[in-house]
Figure 1 (cartoon, rainbow, N blue to C red):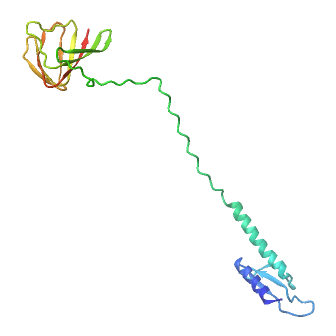
Figure 2 (tube, helix red, strand yellow; figure 1 turned 90 degrees about the vertical axis):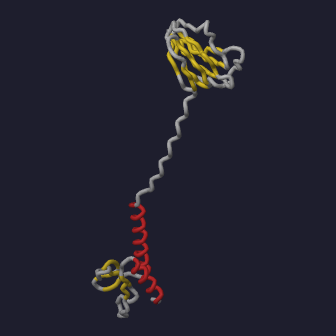
Figure 3 (tube, helix red, strand yellow; figure 1 turned 30 degrees about the vertical axis):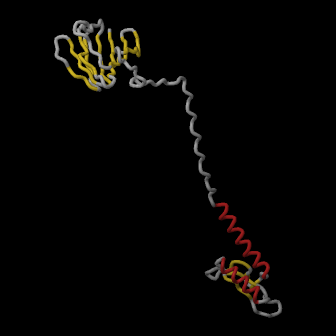
Amino acid sequence: MPNETTDKLREMAAHRGLRLIGSRRRKLGGDFGKYGLNDAQGGPVFGIEKGGLIASAEEIEDYLRGMTSSAWSKSAGSAEPRSRPKAKPEPKAKPKPRFKVKVANLLAKLPAAKRAEAFSELLARPGIRIERIVSRGQATPEETPMVQEQDEWVLLLEGAAGLRIEDSVEVTLGAGDHVWIARGQKHWVTWSAKDRATVWLAVHLD
């Protein structure tokens, strides 16, 4: 048996943790040219009987290749399949709006109000009325005070003005100032800024 065959089988066996045994006895009826395999502790694994070695080189190679195939199959069978990443849920579609919000600005497109105050009604409901008033240099004549049948809450949004309520002293109002005027109370706007618009938000309540 060529040495290269023996070397090849020995290397294959070593890779599998086995030891190749080859016979060199040339007795008639002996096991010359036969092989066997021992494990690492010297115990017989394949091709060894009491009388000697019985496996050919081809049988040894087939056995060793079968070990590789079996080991690979077990490894492949025991490997857990890779779990696929979960697909991200599609975002829910936003509900279609049922109406369009109308946005308005109390300080946009102000009337000139040079000759007289400009009144714009913003909301009117039972028991309440809201209006915007724009002044520019106007004042209430002393002899004709304003008197209303409703309570009034008034907020100065922009500009500056003076206000006097009956039986009180005059107060100066700036942006953000607000006052309460009871129904039936006489009151006067004593002055309003001439260089810019003065914008009031008046809420009338029953």
